[in-house]
Image (cartoon, rainbow, N blue to C red; front, side, top):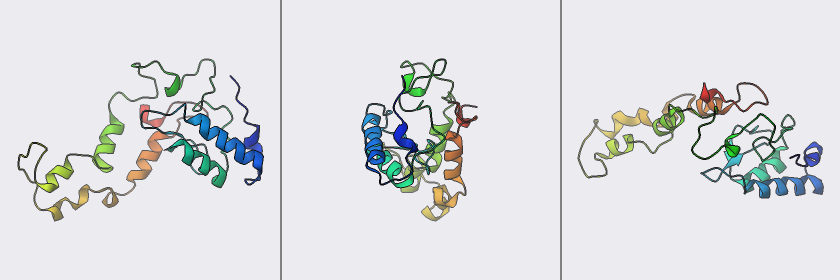
Length: 172
């Protein structure tokens, strides 16, 4: 299916056709959200690497412009013969994009929060069992702001191996 992307070529970001196209794109994105309610953001700043909620994607496109290199909307419902995205995948099947070793989950737990280190700092687990790793001061380095380039690692992990292809660095 070929989707109308003519509005993406409009360079005037306040042109009513551009704004209408961006908002229609965001509205359509609500039908393509992942399990977290996010879609790839094809604005010039995010370049389909970052994911946002559809309304934010629409605003990003209006503010930053549309990534001119994104011509085949493989992350937004356009199907290309021989190419399968995460969105077109059958439930329960793993795509070549997905890493079966849980690298993303591991890094997310370690550096973005939601890990058991928070319980250690507080001095116990969910069951109320007391344990410590020393005082709070010795656990400062568990926080992402103390670890250089963590965000860059997350962004790099989502970048495609080859422009225009659906294989990310995370999968290899």
